[in-house]
Image 1 (cartoon, one colour):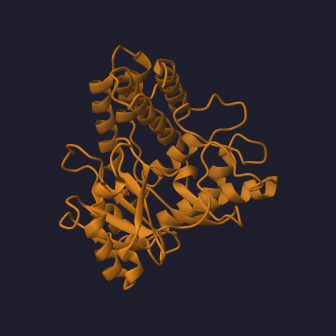
Image 2 (image 1 turned 90 degrees about the horizontal axis):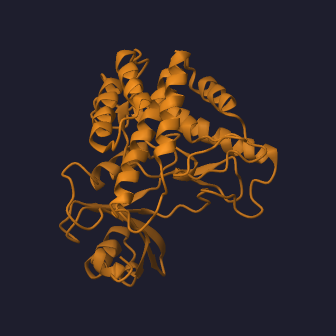
Length: 344
């Protein structure tokens, strides 16, 4: 990818005049592009001009699945959430492919910190700041799940009825396709999840991959989130699926952690998973009685994802990245999922 001019990937000669027209600012006629995220996910570019900076998202190069990398859908949910209590980047331009040859959208570049495997120097140093940072994440998720999807024009954004049953079937099918050997824990977990799907309390917008490195924190206030990013997997469904994934990602001190997911929540001063669940439940006003089933499902889902990464890595299809032997992780997640169901 590095040998390809980013300007060619987004047809900058055609894009720039369109940006100038949309923004009513001729300074966008002269702009530069930098590719900041590559690989198999959607491609992200920073656009720079004398007028400032914007962000462009487009699908990866190559042949795409018909339903994958839906740029208009990703932009639609952000436009729907604009003006709600969920902070999202403002969408500037959406195009179905006529302008640069592929669908894309452009949004504002929101300032702040994206926190992955380390905290920025001098930022969120105290326990109070770290708790504020964590609870802002829980509160933002609760705010997302409180949005009236019909009122914001997203009433047809997904099929919430039977959501978790479909999820179990989908990921069980993925497991059958990607497994390289028998893992009795995963087989048993899949059977027990399918047999015990809880009644859905409510249907809301779900993010699909809500975690600390998918938000932008305010550089001056760790307790403030400026934007929620990466809406590729969003839909209408069971909000507890979001909560369970966040808890899977939320590592505590002494945990083994998940090698594929960065994080800082195991550092001193961050609240525990139990405190995070209590904060969400209190803010959202919901009953988390069935949470153990969702926590088990989150482990099953991520184990299947890890298995797929392992298969692609061994086949040399991960751009030269080596994720090591993930068999132990898959086994551990399967066993942890079964442990959760013992409490269900």
